[in-house]
Amino acid sequence: MKLDILAIGAHPDDVELGCGATIAKEVANGKKVGIIDLTRGELGTRGTAETRDEEAFNAAKILGVHSRVNMRFADGFFKNDKAHQIELIKMIRYYKPEIVICNAIEDRHIDHGKGSQLVSDACFLSGLRKIETVHQDETTIQKAWRPRAVYHYIQWKDLEPEIVVDVSGFMDKKMASVLAYKTQFFDPNSDEPETPISSKNFTDSIAYRARNLGRLVGVEHGEGFTVERYPAVDSLFDLK
Image (cartoon, rainbow, N blue to C red; front, side):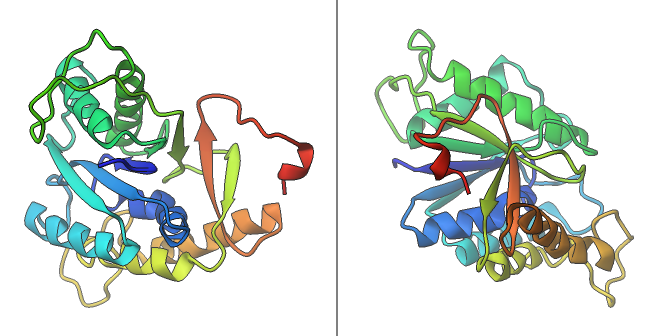
């Protein structure tokens, strides 16, 4: 399946929180978008791996993505090593995305920065034809494929974005996809332990952070990304 965008997160809900509105906008624009979760979030304080599976499925339906796959790497303990890189290379070559979006380059959760570097390395290595891989749904050696761009969404830490996407009109869909993870976020009736993301303040922050980024670039809402290479435009007038 050829995708325009492949969004990757260390845990189910990373993608929704980091770039859910951008995905919803691109889907509405006719782009084919897929999601890969590296782990099932099985070490999460609230809920279970099984509830996260169901929540991820529901969130994917809300966003309208074409595919969602879980790599089932070990939550908290996966490594950026050859074995994990090869498995991701198989997926990158299978989907052949033009753009990959992945975790923040550094963050509070150790899996975020680790997952970010794993994806970046796999995207580069995927372009080397002497690395031979076969995807489980194929019978022949895959052709090398390197995405033309890798972008990193912003998560817990307020990193300075290098580009901001105008996502005005798509925040409702983002919030619906985030709140599909019912076990993870604010619920005054929940008996689960409190976590840094289960407070009302955190849920509220999703909207006000997007509104503040939007304010800074002159739109209603924005989602920010860091880049791995300089973005290029044909004309200064292409910049808003």
